[in-house]
Length: 188
Ligand SMILES: Cc1cc2nc3c(=O)[nH]c(=O)nc-3n(C[C@H](O)[C@H](O)[C@H](O)COP(=O)(O)O)c2cc1C
Image 1 (cartoon, helix red, strand yellow):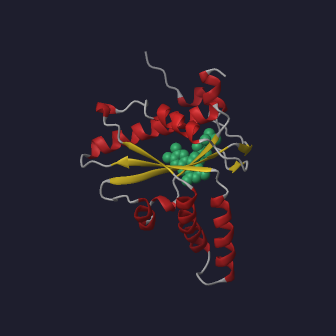
Image 2: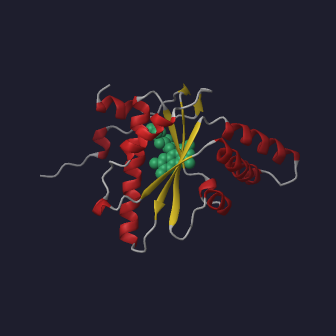
Image 3: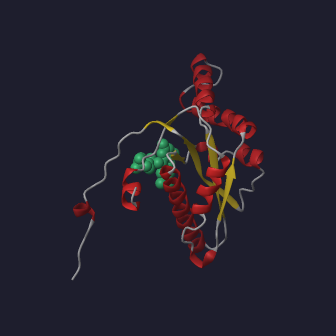
């Protein structure tokens, strides 16, 4: 696949086969990620590769956030939502969380977030090249103090900017973009 095809064909994937992703492959995606452009070579990222035990612990936080969004705690609807959310989260074959190291200067912070985003796209494209789909999630578990505690992170100096859910795709959806003519503006 050419680079242009890879970029255009990649889709966010939400459903995965029940098949593990090798850690060697995950490391190769991280290797591609860290070659992203980053201003002044701040290399402002860390990639947290989760094992089953940690995924189990985060599943509780994920399920609690989802269930409490629409249902009253203690209700039957809450319990059902909680249980289905646990199942959904544990069905993700592999999780990688991306941490941005924070600095005081807001300009540097903004540029570092841009660099992390480039890194994540490198990761997604490398995964796609190997037949592995990724969903970049920015859901509430990334803000939950319990997530920080479980992972031993410090919210004063670190921000969780992405949860990358990944695996071999069960289904790939479609995603349209505006025509280039709609987003381009020429100047003399
Ligand atoms: C900063 C950022 C945050 C995102 N957060 C989520 C998310 O929380 N949940 C989700 O399903 N997709 C999330 N996405 C993925 C987008 O929804 C997805 O890229 C978009 O729908 C276009 O689909 P495509 O990736 O298949 O082209 C996020 C993407 C970015 C760049």
